[in-house]
Image (cartoon, rainbow, N blue to C red; front, side):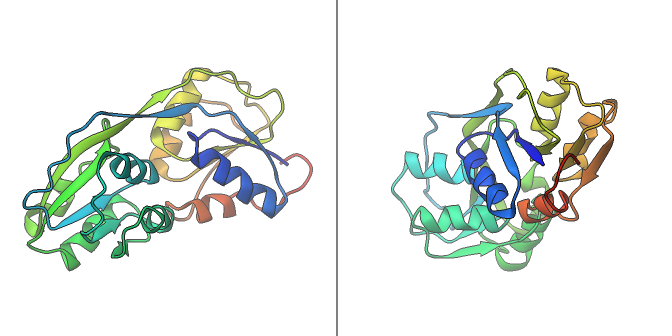
Length: 221
């Protein structure tokens, strides 16, 4: 089975490697690319950091050498990125944005938290956390559509985010007889009017669950 990986690099290569290990044939053709923003990082009065993606970790790490503060992260992939970037205290929600807000509300109550994020985040972490902690967002990167062409041959496409789903819908590839696997209902929503043979949604918003939704590798879908 040939699987089209649409996420931005460098994450796309990591996904492709996991697919190969599982016996799939990956084809990397990103619909999105990440561009760092020249943000000013002010950590005065900040007790902890919150990251909702590997891209945010990379962008923040490039802007400041500070690694002293504890961090809250959305899931395992972001946790690995934070650890690799040099953070020693990493607490993972192992879920989505709502799970991260719950983790902060439970373990970070009363803290002042900086949230390095995308210019167009998928949700408002500060609103979800509410009065449990003070969350201030700063845009450290933006994700833009590549408007690239789809690969010539593929059976299933992976959609890692709502932005990727929207980009795929705008690209309008031939999808009849093919399958889409989305990481969440929000990521699947832009595909609603596309004539896929099937749109599968991961059981949880993690790449592990997304790859599990692929099933077993084999000819076709």
